[in-house]
Length: 81
Image 1 (cartoon, rainbow, N blue to C red):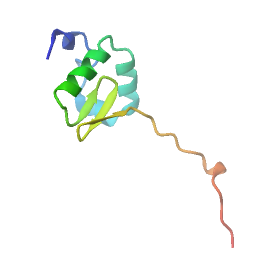
Image 2 (cartoon, rainbow, N blue to C red; image 1 turned 90 degrees about the horizontal axis):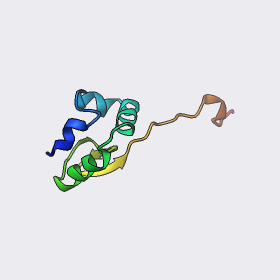
Image 3 (tube, rainbow, N blue to C red; image 1 turned 45 degrees about the vertical axis):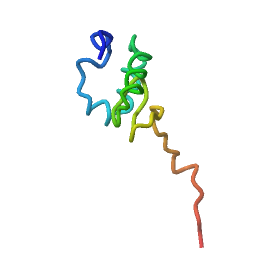
């Protein structure tokens, strides 16, 4: 890893907490000055899992960090007999 790691916004955070808390990961990566370097490192070293450069790596493939939004029950179709 390079010296960019010392500048990473997540350097003092628990990596498992970032993995399990998407909102925290989005906030942390969004304020990070080295997001691009982090992503490039993860891609170059073929990281299997983790949050790297604002992306979630699963099985070596980067996926955008997203917060799932659930529609309210009011908008769902109700079936009646």
